[in-house]
Amino acid sequence: MKLIPTILCGGAGSRLWPVSRELHPKPFIRLGDGQSLLQKAFLRGAVLPDTVEVMTVTNRELFFKTEDEFREVNRSGVATSYILEPFGRNTAPAIAAACLQVAGNHGEDAILLVLAADHLIADQPAFAQAVAQAVTLAIGGKIVTFGIHPEAPETGYGYIEADGTQVVRFVEKPSLDKAQAYVESGRFLWNSGMFCFSAATMLRELEKHSPKVLSATKACLDVARSVQAKGFFQVELGANEFAGVPDISIDYAVLEKTDAAAVVSCSIGWSDIGSWDALGKLTAPDSQGNRVEGEALLYDVQNCFIQGGDRIVGAVGIDNLIVVDTPDALLIADRSRAQDVKHIYAELKARGHEAYKYHRTVYRPWGTFTLLEEGARFKIKRIEVKPGASLSLQLHHHRSEHWIVVSGMARVVNGEHEMFVSTNESTYIPAGHKHRLENPGVLDLVMIEVQSGEYLGEDDIVRFEDIYGRC
Image (cartoon, rainbow, N blue to C red; front, side, top):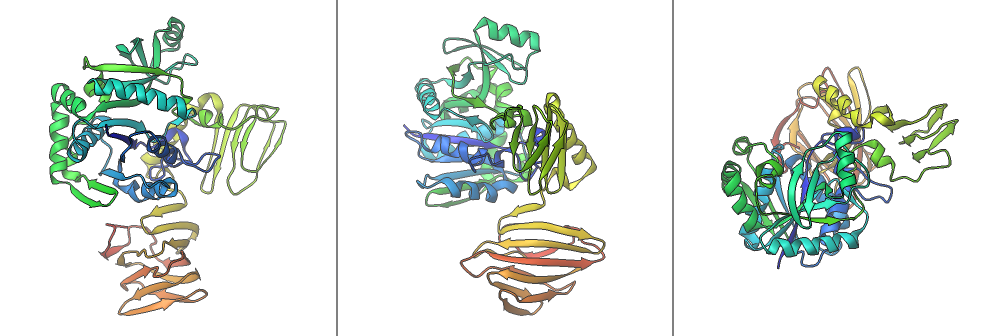
């Protein structure tokens, strides 16, 4: 039996702004132990018996960042594969694509274990036991969901009414009164959003209940670009074809219609970390009920969650607040209104403000750049390029650039000239000159870039050659 843990890595994590952004969503948030939620999801599946490969379905823009995250923790060398979407299309197309890919590579009897990239599971042995039970049901032709024993009448989760392993019905997020009744009845479980099934079973049920999802997804895969190497597979779906795939969740597309649904009830220390209040509870409180990450000075403060960054946070005479400080944004919210942070994110997006999309440090396939300072006609960045990596051959019409190497060595194309620039050396790129930056060494290249000109927007760029595709 082959088991393929399949991680769905999407969504904006808008309720965890300002740490979560569109291009740095919730799965990439690091917890106190230094690991991200995404890395924990990878390890959760990679260590299970019979795992032959970990598959991830994610946005194309997040691929290199995801690959870096896995490389940090994949010490056992588990094979990885990726399905890259041009934009989000909900869970049914993602699961359909995963099933088609797994069926083609491993056979229709292979078992998929669908995991969310941004959940936390504290009890790995209990999780492994629940997976073993789910795999047995999946081999028998069931589509298995994992139901969590409810700890409280939570209104933010969907529920499953269960009779043993039989699903009686799925219930949408309830009112508080209904949630209380569900918990007291003992028949209801939280719907975790994790699933287990064979590729054959899910493909059969998709064909039966949502044939348009299956046919449209298959059409995408038929013309998708793919790359394969030892222990690695990647398929990139085209935007034009993917736009024709129905936007629907697997719950609506299959689970609420099928008679093959089953449930494994479990207590595994599960949380979807859906708000700052939930994330804050991972930090132990002090004697006043405050949970603090980073450096903070508190006077007459109770029941607050405070996450600092590079600066000291001072707080006086406050109660029951969330304070999250990042280099370019500060969040202050009442803890009882933690779910409403998403409205700040939505307003930033509606205004086209970069703070919904980027942090000051932006990740690229070749490395990172960090905005240090900007003003009228100038912008200063710290640029870090991975060993062997290269930026695109490009030019800017409206700005010139000064590059100062802080550490490492740069190979620079500047107009018709190619040169090496060492530590403590610099070069000047006039506006209109074709140029490229490359790290030919084995250590990271770190440099300071000073831009000057009448327009400094990121869209003032003409690319001629780019090995990564518009990066």
